[in-house]
Amino acid sequence: MLEEKLNDSKESSLDEGTQIEAVEAVESVETVESKDESTSNLAENKNVDDFVESKSMDDPLELKHEEEPLEDKQGMPGFAKGIIAVVIVIAVSVLGYGLGSGWFTRSDDTQDSGSNIAGDGPLLTGSDTGAARTSSDFDLDNFNFSLNLDENGFWQNVRALDHVELFDYHALEIPADIHQVSEAEIQDIIDSILFDHMTTERIMDREVVNGDTLNIDFVGSVDGVEFDGGSTFGMGMEVTLGVTQFIDDFLDQLIGHMPGDVVYVEVTFPEEYHEPSLSGLDALFVTTINYIGGADIVPELTDEFVAANFSAELGFSTVDEMLDELHTILQDNAIQQFLHDYLSAYVTVNNIPEHIISYFEHMMLNHFAEEAAQWGMDLDTLLDMYGFDGVEGLMAESQEDIFGEARLSLVLQAIAEDAGMTVTSEEVAEYLLENFGITDFDEFQEIYGLPWLKQFTRNQLVREYIRERIVLA
Image 1: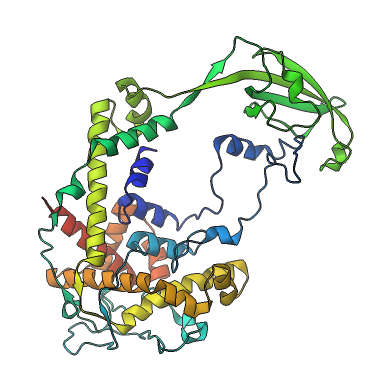
Image 2: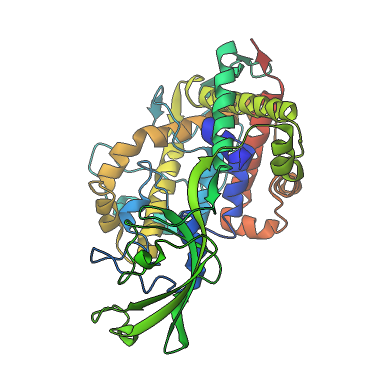
């Protein structure tokens, strides 16, 4: 939870947590957004609220597990979020897609005359950008992540140093206003952590009155036989008298009772109840009033609080240790973000070979094509639902992202060329194991191809090299 707060406070496209989450997505991609605690607790109870009646047509308390609407899954133009292909989750999350710059020109050459990097395999090339493009202009059937990369994970026929004006990556200076962490930033995190650990006062010494928020449990039965969906299974349900809508006068019968009382609530299901087997039947709910909810209680930041909540998981047990860790992580996040932004936008790139730009265009369009297939629709229909005017509209709105990613990859390759940095397949496997716990290297190689995995690993090592040598102003 603490790490989540830190990541929320200062986003970093390249932090380790983001990378790990992206790689773990290979095993599982969440398709349902988290619900609030009270709802999620009841999700396992099938129709626990079947007896609840709403003022509206749709019961606000009824748990439904319908597929999320497609429009809720829209993300940044060019790189949509939501239920997406696993390989795109990794590529987008780890490489930080979506942060780019247009400070360069586009080169129509797919080979540099002075290149000393030879490559094999087909080169993806874009169509005439002056004409409106459709999906037929892109060879998605033959797309894979290692296209346009040579066996070492460098762009085919490209010497990046011919396109990029290098900076002193051996001693990149970080401005003071970037790496200095203010007390206000730390306090914001502290306040958020304390809010997450807030509890509710449990009132036990007075009668229930209208307007109270109660925590209750109940077991329902008809003619002495319990029915499906009629019990909270002892997990507690929060209700507010006068607000929460139950059938008949269920909640009114709790008024005047004390917390701890067991109330035998007698009700009659409506004739037009949504569960036909219960329509018009008399029912008994044996209801326990657990407590009346009072004021919210925000804990104090003490050594005892820190030890109880963070010692086992994060390893610190005093306030001072926690504050030191907060400072370190916030500072590191800020530095990592600055480094990413610097590499993405402030290194001079004179031009970008056409086939690198085409690669990222194909990667982006391939993502949408795979998502369209998941939904059982054609690509144009999906793009229309996202608000794009076909493929041409998507490309037009995504040019900054596409060029930015092409630009960043060229900068990282130029640094690797200058530093003489290459990686072997053994080093790739070792890196994935040490940083992400990935033991099945062959599975990843089958998905991405060895060239892409080499490029990915090398890019991470380039970033680490620069990060280890930064100079704080």
